[in-house]
Amino acid sequence: MGSLGHQLHILFFPFLAHGHMIPTVDMAKLFASRGVKTTIITTPLNAPLFSKTIQKTKDLGFDIDIQTIKFPAAEAGLPEGCENTDAFITDENAGEMTKKFFVATTFLQEPFEKVLQERHPDCVVADMFFPWATDAAAKFGIPRLVFHGTSNFALSAGECVRLYEPYKKVSSDYEPFVVPHLPGGIKLTRKQLPDFVRENVQNDFTKLVKASKESELRSFGVIFNSFYELEPAYADYYRKVLGRRAWNVGPVSLCNRDIEDKSGRGKEASIDQHECLRWLDSKKPNSVVYICFGSMASFSASQLKEIATGLEASGQQFIWVVRRNKNSEEDKEDWLPEGFEERMEDKGLIIRGWAPQVLILDHEAIGAFVTHCGWNSTLEGITAGKPLITWPISAEQFYNEKLVTDVLKTGVGVGVKEWVRVRGDHVKSEAVEKAITRIMVGEEAEEKRSRANKLGEIARKAVEEGGSSWSDFNALIEELRSYRP
Ligand code: UDP
Image 1 (cartoon, rainbow, N blue to C red):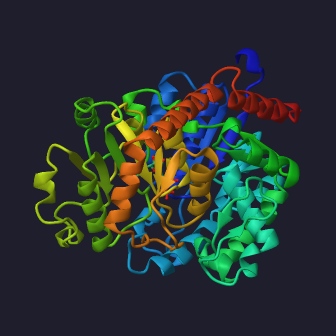
Image 2: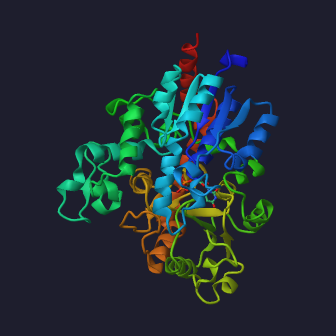
Image 3: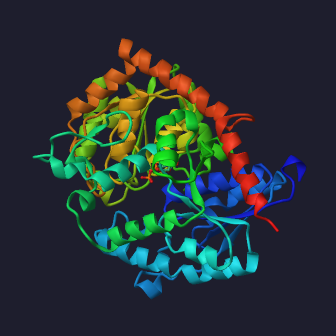
């Protein structure tokens, strides 16, 4: 097996949501391409989401496979066929369904242990939402790595907020506080923190987060889809001050090199990739704004209208991903200004559904990316060398925004003030127009673009031979190998 010596076997077990499965599959492909035998555990209905790309990797001669385990939907009171968060995220009962979904995932422990017993891998990379995976792996003497799917910055900032509770020391929801002990003097407000943090709520979800923290401390370490040069102060903080063992092996999306790989991530794209490329090819470099809010967020009709109005007023060309299907009930709602599509015929492309995001971002015509700051999207934008307009909604997205706007200085915020669960804050069209103009036109835009371009180059170097992620990968593999009998 070449210079890496005896072949290791690593099992990857992603949480059942696109934002977790996509980077885990990329990571498994990365490991396989570097000579590691990899197996991805998932459920029958999720396997087809990545079986094609896995087959392609296999055809190249790499050792990669999927192993399915049954998803206990009915046992948790969920309808059959509900095997990932897609099935209910826009449902009226999303809250209830989410709870049941998390319950169902705890039932995965038993089949997971069976796989461990049968396959006995050298290591397991299991999602942070599976806190029981550390003990399950320990039963068989297998080291467990945690995959959070976010940045060193966000995890470090979250930990500082949790430990020092700065939000309790301000007099109002909108009074900024500095995140204590975190390098960089990062400022946030109480309203930008998750509701369960700022309101000190105890519920099933906070219990899960607590269990996840505890299991992380007992695990072998943490694996990041990030690269050292992106956030050195925070990668160091996470390791040296917070005392975690961590490896940065990203950006993992770079393992997708050709058109098919780049457009085949997650769900099937709602636009033919060649048609999409033809459209982009007809545009000048840096002349198109790409707008997409990840796989979970959804907006009200009135918010979509504000976006459309802001876009039109900015005068910029755009690709806008809207998760509404043509001719669906939702689409009958009046979410576009009158005559918008006709007026924008040459200027804009609306993708209803799923976009081939990395393919789009990597195109030279894209001049900026309006993102909800999910970590995958943020890192994909950074890796493509694009300046960002940050529009965080929930999860740890407000931290990622700060990394982009205040530390990397490759983006501008659209001005979101409040963390919400799913539906985005009400941002006015004027704010949308202003942020787009600021990132696309003028001296500040040039400066941000040149900084973003440089960062993209550094990202690509990180995963090449001799780069920081390449080296972290080697260090991890060597250490795992040293445990082999
Ligand atoms: N994505 C995509 N097409 C879409 C929407 C999302 O390919 O239309 C991908 C995107 O490239 C990223 C992932 O889905 O890899 C979303 O992850 P992220 O962490 O950005 O956000 P989440 O969906 O978890 O909120």
